Image 1 (tube, rainbow, N blue to C red):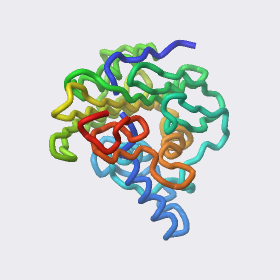
Image 2 (cartoon, one colour):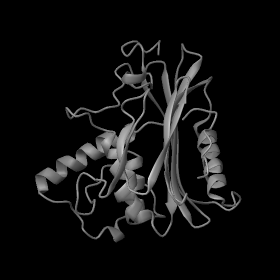
Image 3 (cartoon, rainbow, N blue to C red):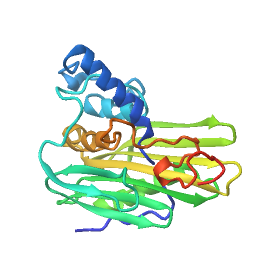
Length: 267
C-alpha cells in the first residue's frame, strides 16, 4: 500500500457539519422519512456546477442544512470492516466500511487519520494540529490537493475547480478563523478538500485542521453516502447524544484537545 504522507503544515475538524446534520435529523423525525428520493437532480444552494450527491455533500460541508438524504438518516456504514480509535484524540473514532485500512497520524499537537481503500483509489483524511503564525487556509488546502494527487498518481497540472468557498469570521474578540473549501475533479477523480485556520491575537500559533474525501468520479455519489457521510456522522456524537467537538472558549481547539478549555488565551 502506498503511504499518504502527512503534510507538515497543520489542518480541519468537522464543525461545519454539526448544525447541518442535527437539522437533518430533526426534519427526518418530523416527516417520518427522508425527503427527496430522487437525489440525482438535487442542486446546491452555493454552487451551480454540481448536482446530486455532490451538491448535497458540498452544501453540508459548508454548513448548509439538507433534508434530502436518500432513504436513511443518519447515514450508516452498511458493511462494517473495522473500527478506528485515535489513542491521543478519542473523538476521532469511527466504524469504517469493509475493504479499507487506516493510518494513524500522531505528532506533537497533531492528531489525524488516513482511511484508505485497499485499491488506493479512495481516501478519507482528517487532521488537526497547530502551526506557527497564521498560515493561509488557501495555501494549506492547495498543498493538500497536490499531495493527494501525487498519491493517486494524477497529473497535478490538470485540475478542474468545480466549487470554491472561502471566507473569514471572528467568532469572538481577538479570534479570527479563515477557511478554504474546494470541490475538484482531476484524472477521473473527484475530491472535496477543506482547510481551516484559527488564530488568537495573544498567541503565536494557529489551530489548523483539514478534511479531505476523494474517490473515482464514477463512484463518488455512492461514496458520499456509504463512506464519507457515514463516517463523519459518527464523529458528531458521544454515546450520550452530545456533540463531540465542543470548543467552549472559542479558540479553535476542541475541548478534548485543549488543556485550558475555558481560557481562550491558552491551549
